Amino acid sequence: MHKYYEAVVSLKLESENSRGDVKIKNLKEVYLVDAMSITEAEAKVVELFKNFSQEFSVVSIRGSKIIEVITPESKTPSYSLNTKNNISKDENLDLE
Image (cartoon, rainbow, N blue to C red; front, side):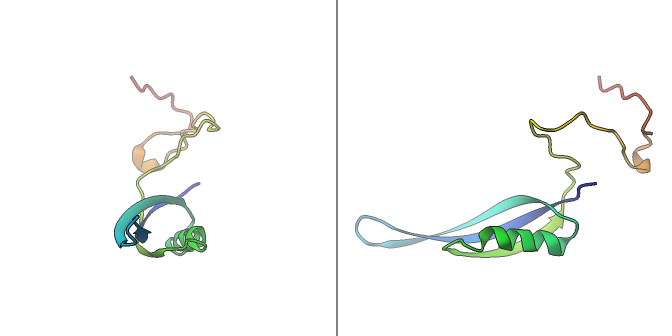
């Protein structure tokens, strides 16, 4: 089972215009990370940015409510939902 975390990363981007003036832009971006723990999620984000030439920091990481990421390669959902949703594996879901 996948567990997803939302990692907020702060970036400081420096750019130079045609006059030679340096402009610093502060950004915050949110990344969805597939990991088993918060520690692993942070390690994956740091690994992603290790060759980044600008300054960055991981501001926060929290568990995501996302249960599955659907991609073109995704197969039909198995509906093996947890018991708090009161849906069994064999139950036919009427989503209309």
